Image: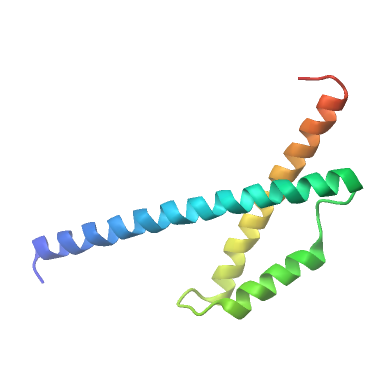
Length: 105
């Protein structure tokens, strides 16, 4: 392989990664919309945002369905971060709703 071939291969790989990143972003936004529905139910029922048992189920599901090459511990860390962000969004929503109840804006 010469330098120009390497540059071409890298450019192709980067284009494919950009496409995958856009797909991941669409899926994360889909997940965020679902989390919004969950947050609505939890707010109405005065349920806690943090549910450790549910998070354990998610990690188990990810581990069981991970066919690699992403290592299981790496997949778990990624999902820990996703879940943390989703929990953060639920808190923001809850705080926003509480501010709205008080007439704040």
